[in-house]
Image 1 (tube, helix red, strand yellow):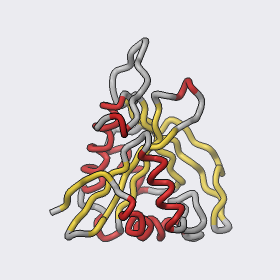
Image 2 (cartoon, one colour):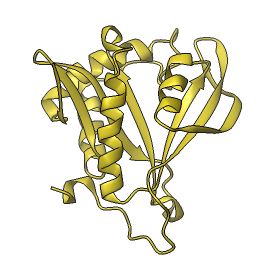
Image 3 (tube, rainbow, N blue to C red):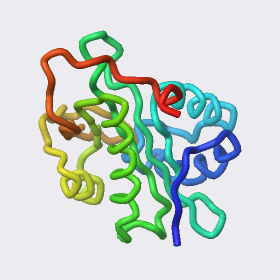
Length: 180
């Protein structure tokens, strides 16, 4: 049975282990060419958690997946938009765990005051596209040959999910640390 919680600094090495296969030059899933160092992973976790949730999914005492929000664009007019990412260890994919993780992340993002979630996916990626569409995301853009990795060019798909009903004068989203 899996359980979910906020990530902590001590999770960084297990998070890196899940992320590592996607960072190789042969995998277009991540936009990075190599696995971040432990120090970099810890710094990212700390920075992201100042404003956004970073959730981990555990099973039998080990982390099997994670999802988090991040800044979509730094300009003020994008304050209500959030970029989302999700990664699951290969042996746990296809068991609806990603949906469970994303559902909790989206619930927290709504409570913070976010209205739009965006996922950026290197194409083709049938698995990621299917997951996002099953969660209600709609493909709203395509950057032809927007990424070069491992000697190949890939299109980049931009997927959008409306998190809640729009308001004419929304309050700024709360920082995740302020929610506790």
